[in-house]
Amino acid sequence: MMMHTTLAQLRILKLDGMAAGLEDQMAQPIMGTLSFEERVALLIDREVNARNDRKLVRLLKNAHLKYGQAAIEDIDARAGRGIERREVMSLALGDWVTAGHSVLITGPTGAGKSWLACALAQYACRRGHSALYQRVPRLQEELRIRHGSGVFGKWLLQLAKTDVLILDDWGMGAIDSMTRSDLLEIIDDRAGNKATVITSQLPVEHWHAWIGDATIADAILDRIMQRNHRFTLTGDSLRAEPPKLSKKEKTTDLS
Image (cartoon, rainbow, N blue to C red; front, side, top):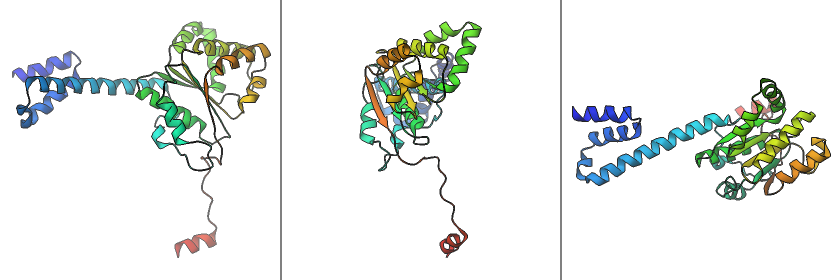
């Protein structure tokens, strides 16, 4: 009876991990051979792990990653893709997030730019950092809506606190003067403090022309380039479907 009360109280206190750990201990007679201190240590460890799991779920949900299951462990580093697993792992395991570095990923459509960006952000979440995915073409309309509703300033402050910001499809389509100014505000808040991942089909040397306004372009690129890591992906589109077999080839294959 006392143990049931204890379990109920642990759950009331939102110590669900500890409650689950205590139930497991009650179901395993071998736990009786452990000391009181050892059993308490195991319960605390169970609670810490449970809280970390819940935090990761929350971080990934709030990140809105395009590829939520992307993981650096699954990187396709086959020859011809222009990417080395060792280089990506070195970056992911380093201090690029806390140091506020930029990661610039360029390459043709379908090369895996967005996937790599999401994989880096996903691993950052696994290390306890917050992240947010944004497509630049869609961001233009969202910025206009936020300006119109009067919440742009508040959103900008929230964005400035996000550890990793993905700006996907940078350079796809023209941008207006308001978007240029907003991008400068976003980048300026993050420069040297928060990490930014940018993916683009445009080579970096063409970004200045895409931004359009020379003064704003200089300011944005100066901040992005302060401390950056670059990946230039190559190869055929990973979205391409396998070639269809002719009737003759199908017959040969079946034989």
